[in-house]
Image 1 (cartoon, rainbow, N blue to C red):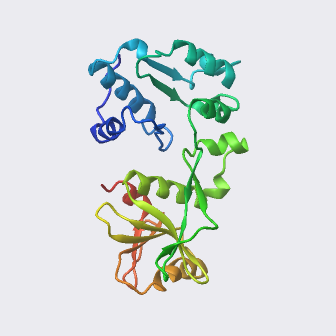
Image 2: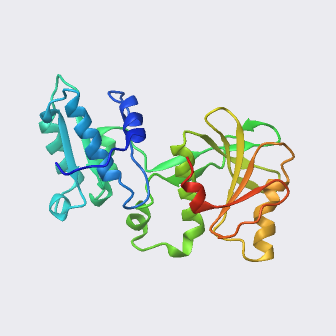
Image 3: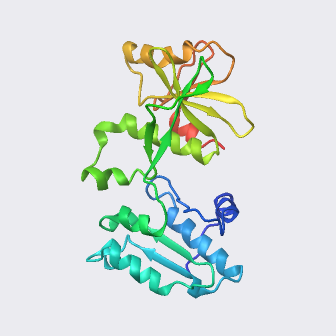
Length: 252
């Protein structure tokens, strides 16, 4: 096996869910190391004494592994190799390359392509039951679903990226509902403290700046409030921390 860089934080998180009856989905930006992480996790399982035959690894980035292959043939191929009296570990890398792969996943385990985010009434301090928002598990699905690059939707894509990072940090996440507006993310961090996040690609004109700052300014509590944009020289105001989103993504 090729030399792989250890990613202990993520390996530990995967190991914490080992043998739990849920599907584990590794998300992240393209070329961020998701495939390497899967290989590392498989290697760690073998070190723990799991037999090679209890693992199946499918790399669908390689054309020979997905061309002319449908979800149903793949399903039965995997099923035929399963150990009926032992735990099995199935690794599916770039599964979106399989036609109708959602049906395939439904056969293996109840799957999801989107994360659902409930709305939270900031003033009433309660979760709302309607008008949820949805974020993609993997932004690569955008090109599968639309068949083209979505550069025109970069603001929404950036919001999705921020959501995935908040999720990676193990935050509990809602959309913050106000009377006439909303805050992209109202979260509880790992120690139970509230934080607010507004996301915009840029606020280069006065109208956009006012629109993005206004929801945060309307919340009259003392919890941390952040505006994340791509600006190289962010300007904080009124206690709201304006941060460069790329630098924020690199924070622990």
